[in-house]
Length: 195
Image (tube, rainbow, N blue to C red; front, side, top):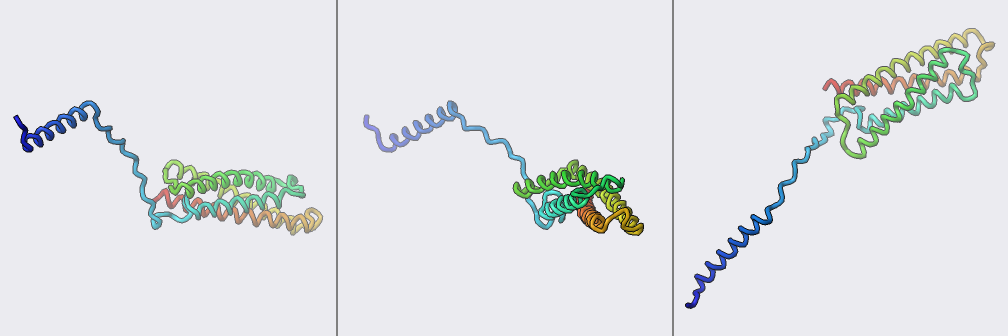
């Protein structure tokens, strides 16, 4: 018997169906990939200026590190600062502010490089509390240093030569600038926690 074209095409369809069925049983399709966690789209209008992970925060941190280092250098290089407790307190606090600011500046650089700001509430609260404590301590150190310098200038040049008193004044001024930037950073991050 001769096969007609119609019966031949039906036979081909049946063979193709059987081959696909057997292939589907022996070689099942791969499972779908697991769902990837969705990163929230970064809305530039949603960024709090100065919050952790922004360029404003990076500039605040670099300013803090710069002014704290300048205050520390003006106080310690070539000057006998250890004669006064307020000066020792300033050196100690600036010695704490510098690594804190540099560490958070590196976190900011990483966040900016990756493009994902740090929005974990626990981490932001630690940053706020650390900034708040260092802000209060640096304000206390700057004020006590300024008070001692004022007292030394009123007493006369027997206790403080004009060269050293000028350096002490520069150190206190840099400490006040560092305090201002630390307080601003703390307030910006507190704003982020509240929102």
